[in-house]
Image (cartoon, rainbow, N blue to C red):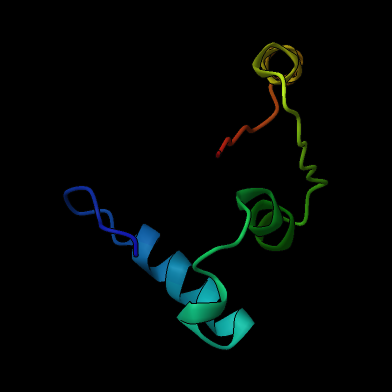
Length: 74
């Protein structure tokens, strides 16, 4: 569940819209951020899985150099 920071209601509104697209909040509670980026922004999005932390760091550094939007989870 999202919580607003001060007067920022857009986070809650965006979460509600995302839940409506998927039918219920239960369907979005364990999703991947890159899927939300892709669906809401219409931009290409990719997910990576790696066992090595250094490999993920290299991927993130390259993406940052290209000014890509990043998200990470574990």
